[in-house]
Image 1 (spheres, one colour):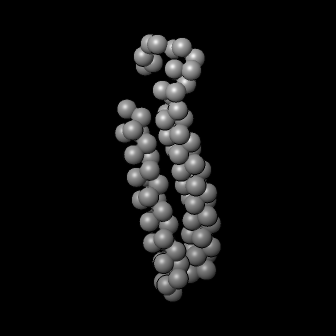
Image 2 (image 1 turned 180 degrees about the horizontal axis):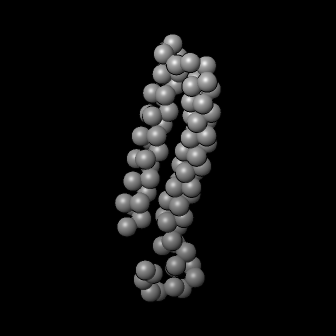
Length: 82
């Protein structure tokens, strides 16, 4: 279950990073007016920040999940957690 969540989240991060790059290429073209460029640039920065935070959270969750078997053995937990 967690592996599906992790893979899906990392896939979303990857797709969003590609979207950000496409938006940056659009900004470099001369098809937008000054206000549109500013708004798009602002949204790219916000989206980049969110993607960075999601990526860090997913990787942290992955590390936590990897440590669960060792934690259960160290603390004597013998039942399955659901």
